Image (cartoon, rainbow, N blue to C red; front, side, top):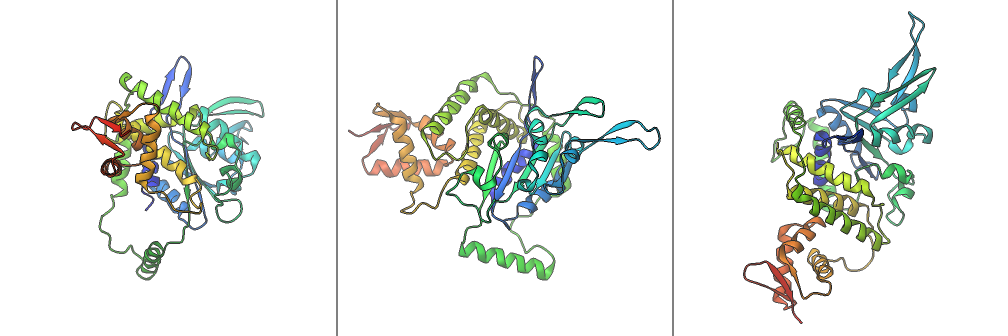
Length: 375
């Protein structure tokens, strides 16, 4: 389970590409926050990332202070001079810092992370020592809801009680909920009892990769620096403008859409290109990055509204109908790319086109290049 969450964590391990132009630095490292109900294995995901990451620091929110995360001024026992001792974020430079129980940190300690998550530096002015330390780190945080279980009727800020300025610095916000499901509960109970009795995993259909092999693979991926070709610039700008338009028209949008979302798409797409050892980003990477962004936002949306749940085919039809506007036809590829960016796959799109074609709602030409609506 949690395939999209695990894929996002793999991209976190690989990371994007840093850009430095005319004294300005754009970070390439990804920041991800996992939030949700207690007992959904958020800490297990963090501990596994801690094991397979080439460089990682693990800490908890309650056991961490602002000084422990950034830097502390110590007195040298031999010379008596004041020296700097790096904290967890400094020690995890060019690596990952896993912070569990992120919501239980003190507000004064949490403000120390703001600069790190965007500027990738730590400014120190203590005991006459004024300096700036590098903290080029990816932050993986896990947070619990404020009042027991996650309440989808409230906003993300009300559930997690974190400021919006901090939440916007996370590239992806994943909500992992503990939903009652008879089949899933049965499989989970059988798995836990088997591990408890035999102290080993039950037989699996797919054998996981060796952690040492994963470390070598991640290190090799980080050596690639893929670029975004100019041919994709117009497409990236178009998708971001559409994202802003939808966020403005949808009052139930759980997260704020800003230019940081555009930078997140660029970071995710370059990380996807790194996984393939490619030198350039392709359009499929942009579509997959948009899909991950859409899936993370849909996990935060309210899915407990009463009434009949819409089928994916009906949702795809609504997307194509909105794309039509005042015209009588839409481009087939444009409609397919729009639906894929919304989190649907090719099979669902093809099924929707064929079903509504049988209902004489629209018709497609033989070359499958245009969808024409019936008058």
